[in-house]
Length: 80
Image (cartoon, rainbow, N blue to C red; front, side, top):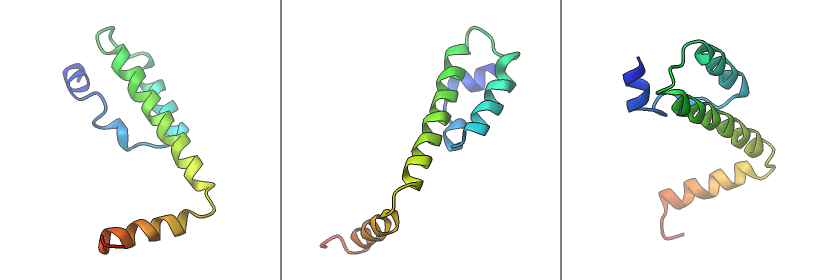
């Protein structure tokens, strides 16, 4: 497992986007982290926390639906 996480530090964790999941990962690795992967685990947890902040910030955007529609229209009709 150590080889996997050190070779692919963010491969699995980048999909998570909640503080609860970050806490779960942190708790899991608290007693399982070797010095060789400690930094990678810390960075992965930080990325999950940053994802959570981003999700919270876009959730408060009142015009989010309009922005998504505009981006989708541009993708479907690049000349717009």
